[in-house]
Image (cartoon, rainbow, N blue to C red; front, top):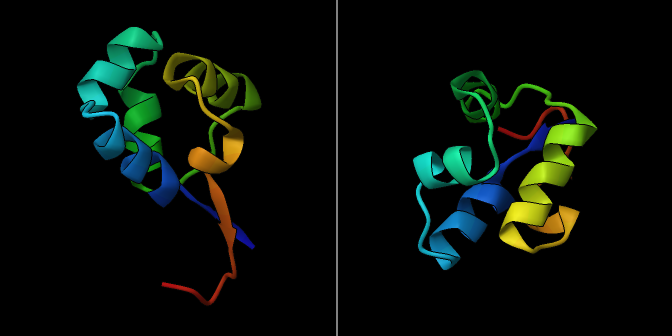
Length: 70
């Protein structure tokens, strides 16, 4: 299984926020945003900051997908 950040990108659209808005409000680095854009892992602490900033559940940020899913 791997992590997909597609739910996060949808949540940002639903909340009319850009990645830059999220980065600034959640006090993330550009590396955090870049890693998520590449589907790489980020820390649970970072996921919690994102959820707190967006006032959402973890399922609104990440999803687990099979390794063979594009």
